[in-house]
Amino acid sequence: MAEVRWDYARSMQGALKMARLITAFVAFLCFVITRSQEAYFVLTIMDFIITLLFFLLYLLKFDRKMTFLFCPLVDVFNSLIAALFFLIVGLFAIITKSNVGTLVGGIFVILSFFLCIADSIFLFKKITFNQPRGRTVTN
Image 1: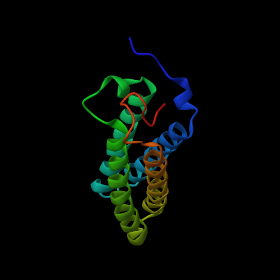
Image 2 (image 1 turned 45 degrees about the vertical axis):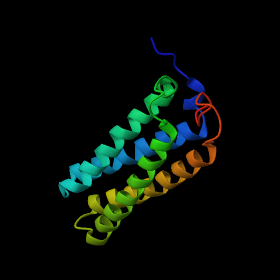
Image 3 (image 1 turned 30 degrees about the horizontal axis):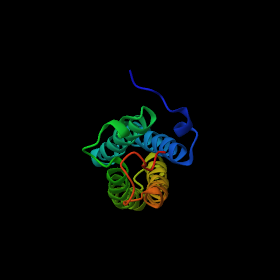
């Protein structure tokens, strides 16, 4: 059975992941309720699922058991790619502003963009490439 690290949930990285989860879910709800373009809500639900998986990966210490993958670096790349997509989709949603829900969803997507950038910066600062595998960003 996996051991739960509650200190991760209370850390800055855990708080950023939770904020990303909340903003992506709110943006998803805004896009679905207003029946916006499918690309808008598909992007937000995909980011929600991937961020939830990374949050659970760190919370349950699976990142330490998976020695074949350097999870913090993969998380940095995920955050940067998600930030790029969020910037593009958020600007399209705000510029088109076909209705109020799409505009609010676009604002939450832009907020998710800034959270992704902050998450990747904090993660990258904690990565040390010259230390043994047991000491990762989540220590």
